[in-house]
Image (tube, rainbow, N blue to C red; front, top):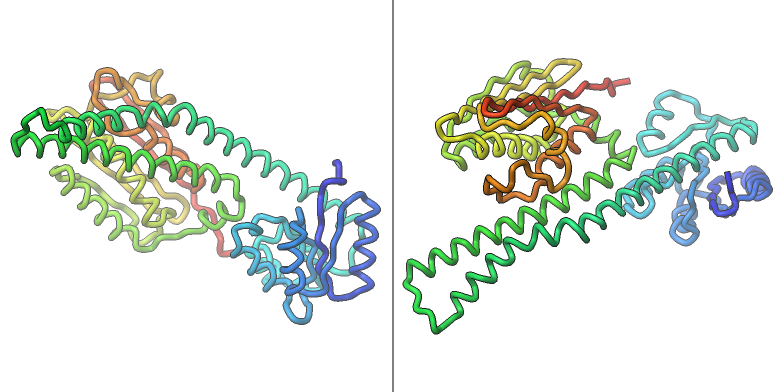
Length: 373
């Protein structure tokens, strides 16, 4: 690994250890700065912008745990890899350190070679994570440049056309016509708003997916109140579509892995699609959810138009809409992409079974990890 471009901050209160580590790391080609305690370390992070931090735990003024906690709360620095050096080897301390984002925990006394192996491994992982994040950001930029202008065009054209008619004094408009024009303008405005919010959510999820600490935090969620939240969301959707949604919930005493916001996004998108793409004479939407100690399962099933087998994978892609030429669709083709991305972040899998003119079944399966240890 080319180490000449990597910067390491050593935070250690014992001067002999601090200076020895600085010398050894500089001999390996790293750019090194040092701090004598956590408070000084925080100041150095802001000015030095290290790629990795080697930090003692027990220090005066501010200990390593407090420093790590402060860094984890700052969006600018929370992803910097951190290796703890300490004489404390208690499992609780190790778990606590890792919960603050520590990449490794090396117990004193230690061999420099062991520390160097850990540093190189963490920097390689950090560089790969940054590369992946940059690739995701490039994909988002391409979406902005190529896909969004097309999606914006129709609602903006509609709004512009009806606004021009409203402002045209040569054309007499009855109150009923004016109200009709305003209705179309409002619909187009709502469509634009949904498109922008969905795009921002997708961009947020793309970035979250590259943040291991954030993903670990998300996957530790255990929602005990999911039954009440589930029913509230479905009642709101029933009222919105003026349709009674049938559902069955099992294992309600076990937790659900999804927080309320994620559950709301998933149910709203899947149920809305099931209703919108079902002819009135075949409107039959059913939802099944089951929680167990080891997994959570959600199924949304309808008897609507269905999707050809060769189109199923495509509909999870951003901005893709099946049979858009024949069916009026007011979305931006991002809803299912967002749901699938959410499910992946929660360590789950989304699958779709569908037959044309028979209906569609969307299944979400999330295995539950044990975070009690």
